Amino acid sequence: MTLLSLSRGFNAGLQIRPRWPARQVQIDSQVLSKLQTIQAKLPAEIGLILTRGYERRASSLGFTRIHFRALGVRLFCLLYPGRRTEIMDIFGSNGHDIDGTHVDVSFLINGRRMRMLPLGVFTPLFWQQHRTRKCAVSLAQIQAALREEGFQIHRNATESLQIHCDYIL
Image 1 (cartoon, rainbow, N blue to C red):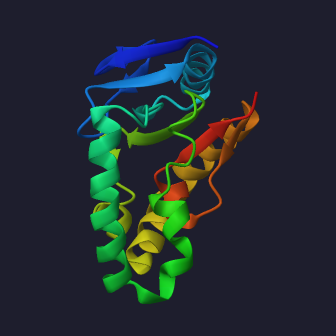
Image 2: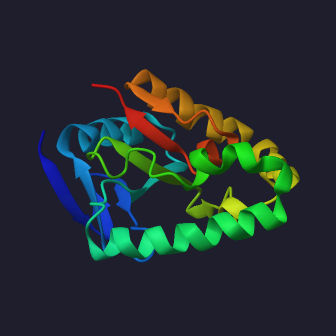
């Protein structure tokens, strides 16, 4: 496995846009190749954005995310007491601290970024459902292309809208 560090910009048609506070996305070279293949197969109006990959738990970035997660869990429990069973799926590392095969992607339609979770994981479910309906065709094309290339989409509805996926080697 070869881990690549990608800075903001484009890489063979794939947009790289690290999620704050990261400055780079670290990803397995084979996963990058698969995402580039997917981008090439998608209709011209759909663009993929790679936002997150491997994050070492012991790094300052990992430390920052751990503290933000702790605050996020508390707030999430206050806002959505009926969704406590989702906390591990939403706030867990979901493999990002294991290797570069666990990634989050986003997308653009006609050059406009589609924010499926405008309030992040705090976006209410009814708003998530509305946005899913609005982008249903493009979202289905992206998810189908990811699955076809060996990616597994996260089972949690909120995580799946962040398009968290794991490449199955």
